[in-house]
Image 1: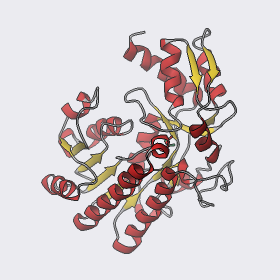
Image 2: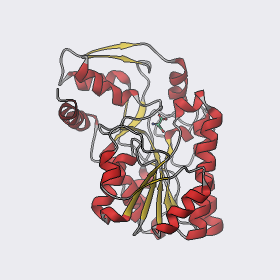
Image 3: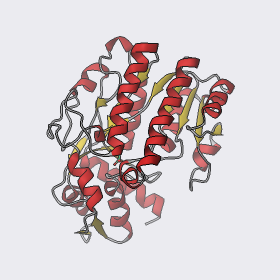
Length: 319
Ligand code: AKB
């Protein structure tokens, strides 16, 4: 990839991957795009290189930007997440499916490679929950999960049928300190760090004992770049590699934070919708295919992530 377009560039992943890609490929070769530019704290992205307003539902707008910059790679991140999706299923379907379809069509026409993430949400209650295999039952019960399975299949189809170089991973919950996540089920694992520092107490909307896979953002960024740079002849599962770095329940992350902030307390006020979603997802993934096919190897575990998150957030929040 020489000229890269990032959609959803002001979101949790977008706002970090744009800066990392600009470090590697050069500021002017990474075009950040978003539906609007009103996101607070987005100056680092909008000010450090090209920025364009692109609504992924507007085929002409995508096409114009891809032609203008001679784009040959698209990191497509614009999407609605799981919890918001259960409130607004029609919006989710429109953005996640029609947005992806538009991006794939432009990529087919203009010969771009594509990275787009799937999620642990592509699995459901009938999936083996522990060490979930790479290839297994995928019968999700959320609209987000349905869109992720359909997206994985659509990307495979565009590769097989039209030769579009599509690649993707199944992201677990992502934890980061720059932009906040927007409407997912795993968001509690980000908010807990903010509250530990700000109010020294946290109310978890996910029940004790509910394990989900998680990952620190630096590992997620490496996953995107390493998979896009991987030798295509080695990839058997082009779209939707299982990847994970850790698996924990609310009480596990709480105990880890408490080692640094002894007065920190945890209470529960379970959100039934988020809890139902969380329980339908795996406890832990088997990521051997990603390790074997393109060298996936995360650097952070719960303890090293917690140390880094607290240090970075202390600076950000001036605490
Ligand atoms: C969500 O919780 O919806 C996302 C995801 C796991 O895809 N973080």
